[in-house]
Length: 492
Image (cartoon, helix red, strand yellow):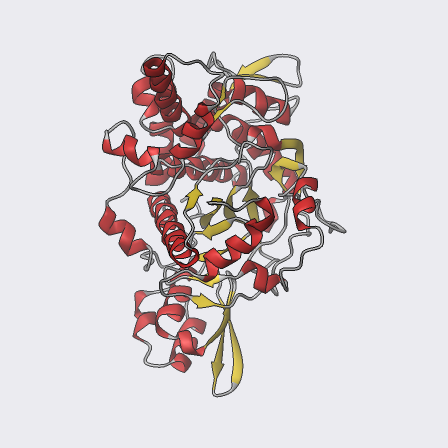
């Protein structure tokens, strides 16, 4: 059987506060997170975080900072790092915090693709609730956007995380997954009007493609790579690495979120079994940007052999290898079947394709506007329409409007979204975090992905949360924190 892969998605949200500018954004994001009105625990354990460690076996002296960000931060002090981040651990096991001026929601760790997609949607509701509370307190209109660019040269990320055995190693991961990461954007890109670097274009399928400059490194804020090499496992570092994927877009369509993650899980299953197809892309950065800008939808990719292939052929090679060499579970079967169906429709049935692919849904929306207005692709208002597609307010966002018009595949039903803002249903270590926040908050000292720390009779007790363990629902029956810790240490 294929190993179940624990995965999560962390999304930085664009923040706009009326009458406020970039110079106030970090403080505004801190206040927004701190004002989250619902149940939460404030206190994060940073002891196991190592953003400068590299999978290739060394440690960076420092991480590069965007010079534009540095201008706004010059001469300012926001306090110590925990104060700046203002972490909140939520009752569903998620993490909500400020990441340099962007409210960021990290889903709880999930096993199934549908569980992860619905937690990602629940995150939109969490951020929107925090924005509403901040607006009421400040008296200023506040908007949050689930996108990846402000159209002024700044990009903020949607990162995916996958738990992988350390024995796989960097070389194999980079070789086997980079072609897939380049190709998958044709099925999961979020779309963008125009460009922010390189030759001008009307429309792209990826919001992030403009911002990548290297095939691989550990940076996330500047000099961004296609393949991120940060070595921060959030678990036992002798056993695991956390594959930190930063080249994806923020998806509004839940189906796209599930597919985005599922494609990488498919690649990892082939990588771990040493069965991934071998593609030698001549220039990964240029290939990603070329695919993003290709309005012919042929999506050609240059290879080192001076020949070429297409993104569709790359994806199909992974599908065929998986069918021939792996025992597929239901999730990976769905990824292959649904992806093939979409690939068959990109030229022949674009309206059907656009129901499940954000870049296509947004493009059809903009083209409808142009047809009605008689405008053209040089219209500056198009970027406003682009941005409003990502507005998470269900009463005013354009993606929500397309849902109501049945132009795109809908979100999970509202009852489930409300449930998943406060609960986790899978037996992952997120359940332990959830119970700690909802039942033993007064005893909780700090939390992180890897551990929980409690105050038991004046003594600080740290409990490790092995990611491969099964955390049963019966943990919630613990009558006191001491029993809960004993039960946690007994999970298998």
